[in-house]
Length: 105
Image 1 (cartoon, rainbow, N blue to C red):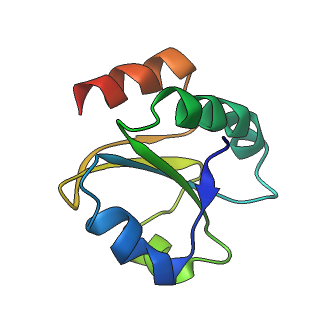
Image 2 (cartoon, helix red, strand yellow; image 1 turned 180 degrees about the vertical axis):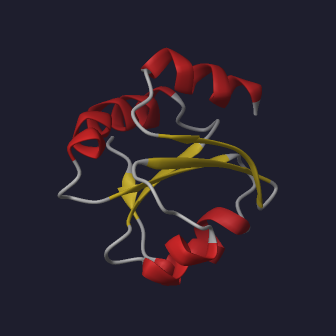
């Protein structure tokens, strides 16, 4: 199951109020490295079902949330635990690098 794309209106309920840790991939459709990350994010979404929620947010559509979290470069990945940012990564990341961050949550 691919990662679900959410919008500003969904963010509080899906991310901040989540009982599980959450990874949010801030991306844009025109961003090359973001497109390369897409399949990795989708694979992780399948592998971590029931352990971590994984969402994508298009910065062009979710400007309010992107601004709130100071997203200046994409892709930016923010790892949330108990509604708070716990870790982040900027730029293309390998699947193994992301798995180690997810496992640390």
